[in-house]
Image 1 (tube, protein in one colour):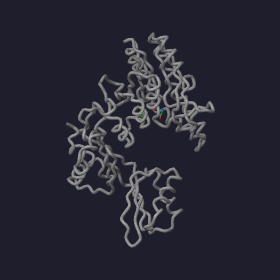
Image 2 (spheres, helix red, strand yellow):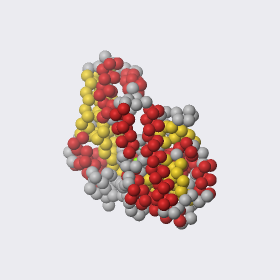
Image 3 (cartoon, protein in one colour):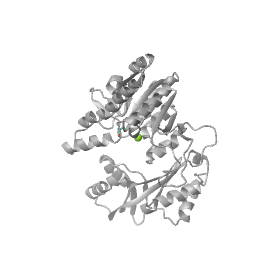
Image 4 (cartoon, protein in one colour):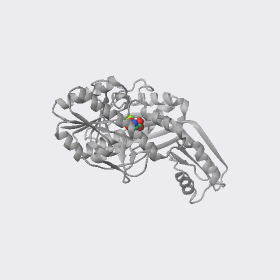
Length: 400
Ligand code: ASP
Ligand code: MG
């Protein structure tokens, strides 16, 4: 069997943990399996690199940032190679250049295009453990690129797909994917499995366990992912295609306080208004999430939408600068999104109503609602976030 194992920053944060990871990989190797290990930078090293960079130049060129970032992952793979050799097992570390992980050109947010597998396969044939840098790639100018924060998960999945690996295990500091954030919801429970689509919604909602592009890739290439802890031997959570088995009606609840609501009152009720508004925001790279438009009255209408908190002021500024035909703009950062996700929603009525009932029982007012095939999201006042998450979680008996 060929197994790709990815370990995040906390799992390789110090000497003891590096040896712990090395031993885990060696165990797998000694079963006769081929092992490819993908590592992130140690601990919070990537953040430290950002601090260092900003100390020199508050606005560092993205190319130089990527040049700097790559040393974080390079450091962990080299140290891991040394640890494995110390334990008497042949291992070799490779960076993105040596493997040849080809990406698009965009610095700081590149996408993997193609991975050459020859070098890795040669090393595996010589019965070495191959340790590869996560997060980094090389573009057509032979420059280093990075895949965006948290991108090592995506490196691991892409490698598993390219190598036709039998398993891709993502080791982290939590036991797996939970029905809700255990720090916020007291009855939260670890899930044995989730579908790709559920995981995608959860990752996008900020569940924080997996980089969402890694889930997209896993779905595209049918790579079964396992999310498990590097600190214990628990089974973890399997992320895979929905089986024929009964799909979970709701498998998780997510909360996201990093949301702001912007309302524009008294826009003209005529064609092209929404286009102009959202086009102006898109040109400023402002990502819009929920959108609500009121019905027209006396030739006027209101549009409200949500953006991340960091974009709220800029969004309001764009509107004030580029529009004059409206009555007012209101920004409210004191809101949060609460969502339920479940593949079984597609075929079951009443799921949204049940969520709304849970909020009604708690006397929590809903300000906006949006849905996808397998998700219902409500916007509520931020102070009610945890109470809402707990109420909804219990309503669907997710802790049982
Ligand atoms: N070290 C990078 C980061 O902190 C990549 C990763 O950890 O996945 O974003
Ligand atoms: Mg991560």
